[in-house]
Image 1 (tube, rainbow, N blue to C red):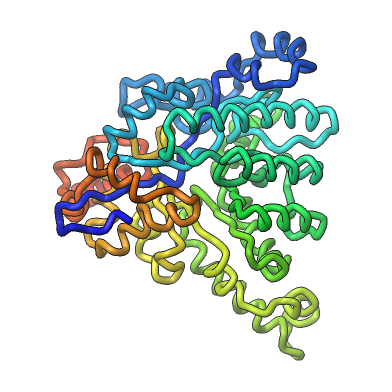
Image 2 (image 1 turned 90 degrees about the vertical axis):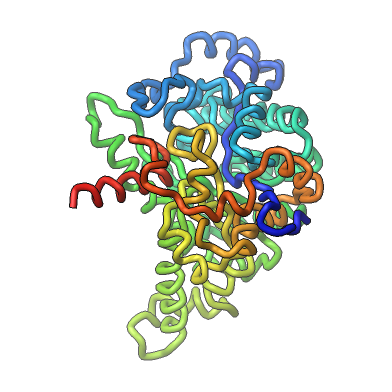
Length: 433
């Protein structure tokens, strides 16, 4: 289990948030033949409309390190050897893999495109994400035990989604990712029509994920630059609504074995939101309270508080973590949190992973650090800690290293990584005072 052997024992770092996908042309062999002719016409002319963002790399000369929305063409998504080299250099023993590139017939990369709305778009993009899912199986097989891949599904056609869930389990993938809300397409998780899908995920034991995406469309003459800025500003707004949907929708009441993971969202907001939801449920059951007329029919079906459902059924991937996320760890539950590096996104930890870990965890007890950096994720994704410890003994950071506070002179002058940039900003404010 990777038990500590004093202050020189190495941490088994499991990143709960990595991104991977094939180069566009490499998806062809994973598509049904009926789509080959149309793919051959589409692929050479496709250009991701987000690819020009982050051209000013500021803190690096590595042109393949891009912010998430502009990273779909980085070879770090699919070059297994380069990726393993970076993971070893950063001390990461294993990673959970979300999509990142452009599956066939998508309008843009996986983390910028909304779910399809029309029947035609669904038919082509469904074939595209099935191709990605099958590529993901092969990519994980190139690093046995070190990659936990997730299968994408849409919720347009539940028969298709449920069949893909069962295929993903048989294929050895570690979880399911459903579309996140987007300005162009909101997906209501409270709808009872989704019950067969939740049941299928519960039956096969695969956790269901939502990951933060760019929630606005790319800039056009009609939208102007506001679309991109608001897409960044409203990402939390549209992401956070899913928590209330699951609670008021009674999803965890009807499916007690269901497990859900929210990733790249931070967690400090969840402590406040869970208290609000707890209060709404409590007051919504009391006749005479203002909340009662509108809330009681939903909340009377709940036998637990939202916080209790959360503690039983949910985990949070705290990639892009900042200090306030760790300060609320007891409110959320240390056993609910999973650190992530967000590789290969520019806003993640690479190439400052050890520095970021020290900024986050240097004053936190080793037992808690182990939970948030490996034990929780290993439990959620079924990873073999004993085998990963053998890798960590070669590449992982020691307990002593992570417990060493960061001094201001160790910080780079600039970084786009959230964890490190927060420390740089604090340093600059102190110098300016």
